[in-house]
Length: 168
Length: 178
Image 1: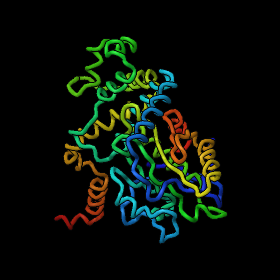
Image 2: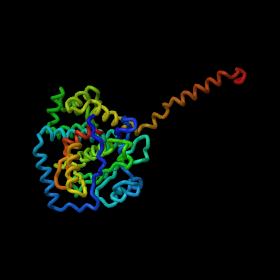
Image 3: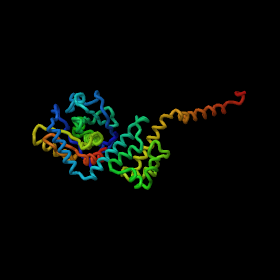
Image 4: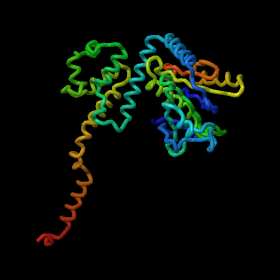
């Protein structure tokens, strides 16, 4: 799917693509990422990995996301991460995570069945409980996520519609 | 556009434990409770959005074969089901009858879905006429894809080649043809 991300150096929207990622092109901790997507995709059931690439550098992942239907019911964003160079200051591209989260919300509308239609779950974890609470508050503010328990959050169908409109 | 700057912290948990029955039951209760807070209009809008996304995915899929084709009628039925509306009521609402409408939207129908109907569908379902018309054009292209070889003779390069040959013939002295 075609999306737009911000190229920070010129502060302009540029074209990018979200597509299924082949196992051999998924990022790993060896490349400076926090998660080894190539390893996780082998072990998670009912999971698909997606990468976001800028059209000007189509072989380089700017962000990666693994989507799963957890326990055959619950749409679940197992992992989302932006490339190390997009975390740096100055970052290369912005709105990469936003596009991937909106895309996962879109998948939850398509693949979530019955009452789970459009309900996207995900989990966050920080070492200190106070940081965990702060991080969850940030996800609530930025993406309209609802807190379920100490790690788990949900983005609901109405908020999915908002994110899809904003990012996709 | 109201977009937010990315958060650097990734989402996900390494070595996450399986969710047990209690957690799954809790999640189900949570979602049921949250869904109950939503209005009928919100629920309907979610269903319509999901159908619109399905139509967009269908249009973007370049590998749809004839047997996988989704007719206008297929997508119309999804909309009617989401809105809990009968075919007859819908047909009446757009100024026709169900039997007449079927002539335009089903494969067996003998009339072609057209721009006027796309305008009516697009406005009625609030998803725009282009979406419906693009489905119609895609489906026609799928049908014609089987006959593509018939059209290979229409090629500007063949015409230019022929014209170029004729120019060469004309430029040669008349005696050459003697």
